[in-house]
Image (cartoon, rainbow, N blue to C red; front, side, top):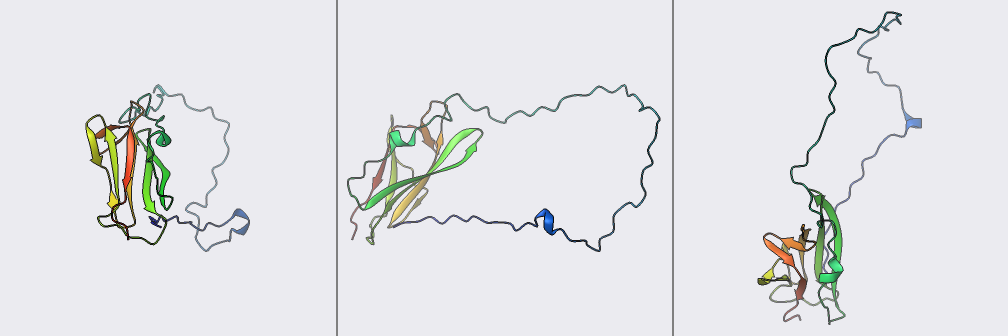
Length: 163
């Protein structure tokens, strides 16, 4: 079986009931006395902060269906796995993995191919004798893409000469 390691780290934090007094001194020891004086008015105008995305997400870039383009796997000892990734500019992104579920090694290495209107393209980011991976990005047209290979309509996992 082919695995791509993923590291998930936890950061230990101190729960509120276990807060301890430290020797660090506060920056100010003076208390500000209360006052009845009115607050001074200002002539400055308040403005709302706005955030603009660098690239506006298209209407379909969150609606890609990985199951619609998943490869056919006639060999029961092969697998196709997916893992959603953080969106890029609001568009869905997914990690895909083709792998062998047995102890066989393939030569040439396993490859992920994508089919679109222009033909069949190698879209493997990583390729080894037991599996291959790729990360696809959902486009405005509702179809996945990979590094300039747009409008992917089918994925193919190749396992050649596996012994």
